[in-house]
Structures are given as structure tokens and as C-alpha cells.
Length: 267
Image 1: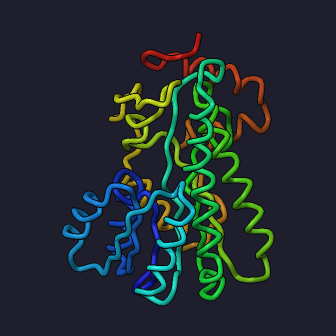
Image 2 (image 1 turned 60 degrees about the vertical axis):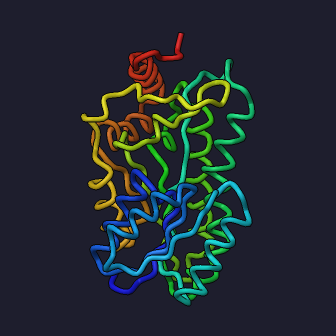
């Protein structure tokens, strides 16, 4: 990764921030996009020995995504890895949710990935680089109370799988990374039925994989040019396995687990 140019969206916190630190430790040059630039400034100071470009980026806005890529090329002249990490979650049953919440989930999670990929793809093809999408186990199994989140993550997986196939002969590497529940701000910032932030996590964050461990696995998967990364055993690999061969059983297990969350919206 030494001197490689890595673009990371949603780099101000959680997995994105951990990814920035992980790639910096490998000698990479970074281009970091996020809405909260004050947190990117803090990261810039923390990683003072790393060459870093920061850009205020709301990935739901097409022009912001274009600018992130354009500024990266102006600064570095190339892109070796694009990590589409920016995302938001939700927590409300579909019956109760305002449709604006579903649209916001798709705009940030899915279209943010589409926009950044569209503008970065010509440069990734030149370097035979890596295109990465950070999804979730929710991109393999529908999570009750998170319909918009699951829909957006399923969509990202389908989109990136298709881009991979279209570029089989170009040398482009496409990785779909699906962490299980990982410690981050995503649950605190999750949208409720009316679009307000949830404000607190309904799960025990201490029992989850750390963002740092998740970032380490993603870095290794990029190095090895893997096509798929499913993290954690019970919540990840086992869930995908059961869903493939015993889907009705997984439906019941998933409902039971999610209904036990604190203040679950499931009836």
C-alpha cells in the first residue's frame, strides 16, 4: 500500500476513521471525505506524517462526490483504492416509517456508492485498482425494523457484483465487505420512523467487533484482492450459510434476535 492513493468516504468516524488509520500505517496517501470536516481536521493532526487530502463530502449529493474525486486527481494524479464506506441506518418497522426515511437511506448508502464509483472508475481502471463497498450482513439478510437499510445494502451488493462482472477483463478488483455488528456511531445516528436521529444504541456496543479490527480485515482483503469479505462467525458467516440453506429458519431467528433489542419497534 506504500504511496498508493486511497479514497475513503465517511472517514470522520467509525469504520471509515479506522480505515484511514490502517491505510496510513501502511504508507498510503489518503483522500478523505465526510460531512464533519472538523473531525477530519482532527484526524489530519493525528496522522501528521501521512499525506492527507480532506474534502467536505455529502455523498448523497452528486456534485460533492464528483468534487471529491476531482480534487483527489488534482492532488495525487491517480486513485488506487476507492472505499465506499459512508452510510446511515434506521430503526422503525416499514408500516410506521415515513417514506422520506427510505429515500434518505437510498440516497446516502446506495446512490453515494454509485456516484463515487462512477467518477472514480476511469482512474481505477488505469491503475487496475480496487473498488470497495462496505455493506453489512443486512445486505445478505433482511433485518426487521431496518427495511431501508437492508434494501440499500442489498442494492450496493448487486451493483458492485455487476460492476465486477462488467470489468472482468480490465483488471479491476471489486470487494464487497460485510461486517457484522461493529462498534460505531451508526446506531446512535440511525433514523427513526419520522427521520429524527435515534440518539442512543439499542445494543451492547462492548460485545461487538471493534472498528479497528474490522478495518484491519478490510485492508488485508484489499491486499489479497478478495471479492467478498464476511466478518464475524455467528452474526456473519453462519447467518449467510443458514440463509442459503434454511431461509425460513433464519427468518424466525432474525425476528427473535431483533425483537429482543432495547425498545424494539417489532410488535
